[in-house]
Image (cartoon, rainbow, N blue to C red; front, top):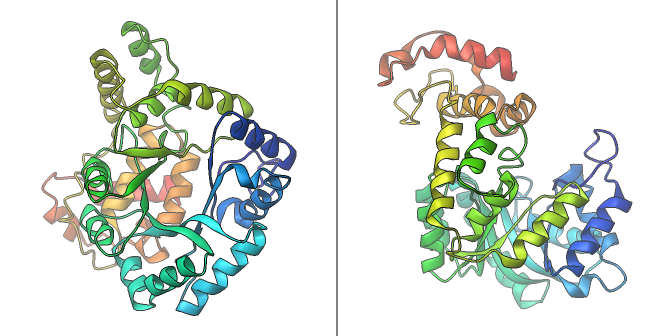
Length: 357
């Protein structure tokens, strides 16, 4: 998902360098390669197919995902899977996921008999194991876990997201049901490493912890015994080298009390940069104009938490439909009357429009 590219064009993977990184990782013991239909503007799956030629494919478990937002019928499911097999030059995908499920997309999958499609693909050998990745609410996560005989699931998990989406409760729930759990975004897309607040390294030094923010973030995820595998989107060889080194000895329940305390202080440091005191209670909804106020304020806060306006704009564009955006506010003030935090929502949405749109 975050391979090195030529210039700033995400569709132009630096294939020589990316293949060198991938082969080095496999030589160090990395055995799970995750891609998906839309990554790198559609260039990721074909690259992976080319890079795994010459015996590399046999050394790894290959994972990709059904583009659920593009599928309208069960026939579409077969169409995309067969095309993915062709793109990646393989007869079988070891781990196949329904991509990015939430409550709405799960119901859509049920209506089009995507579960029957998974059964058939498992029977005929086109896929080895069925799973799903998730970006929704905890209640829906549990429904999906219980809704099919999954082998595994994939959730966003890092020390800033213990209570976000599936979170720790979802992690433990899935593991209790016998599912392997794969953690994505262990460093929040690099937000926990780049543009880190000045105080992060100071807290590490005061705690006597000689580890980079990246290493500490990865070790926090691996510290959880319910985690089966950690996905890290690496865009440079030095990241591959560091991650492989850390993975060699990161184990469940291996972080000390002192290290966990420092991570807690780092979390508080990030949260202290919160700009808007929104608790995501939802009292401001529904907005008469369809504005998704909590989602907008969350992205706006993250812009300040991680000091990354470009990433915030990307998240805003991808997460919100046109009709849900801040610029649709008509200043009716219904939301402000309902807000228990007394947030000046109208003025804040204006700032969100200026910053994110």
